[in-house]
Image 1 (tube, rainbow, N blue to C red):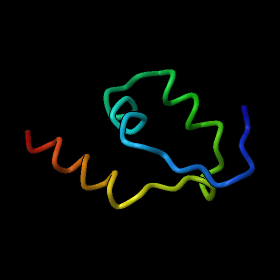
Image 2 (image 1 turned 90 degrees about the horizontal axis):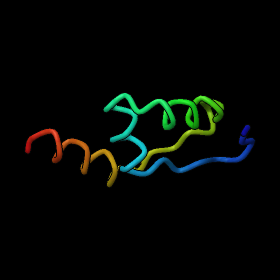
Image 3 (image 1 turned 90 degrees about the vertical axis):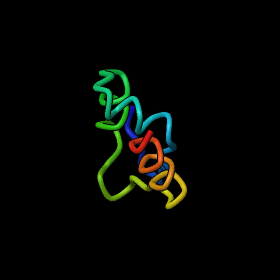
Image 4 (image 1 turned 45 degrees about the horizontal axis):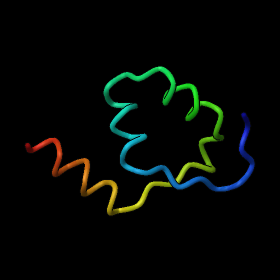
Amino acid sequence: MAFDKKVLIDTPIMIDLLRGIEKSKNWLDGIETENRLISVVTVAELIAGCRN
């Protein structure tokens, strides 16, 4: 599925991606790089999760 609009990528997708879940990687690959967005809240959650 190709997206031509901006897509906000939330924490669960990023966690799956970092864990190597192929389904999340394939989904993200369907989004053009310039259309991928991540919030500062998601970044903070990922950093906090790495500490635990």
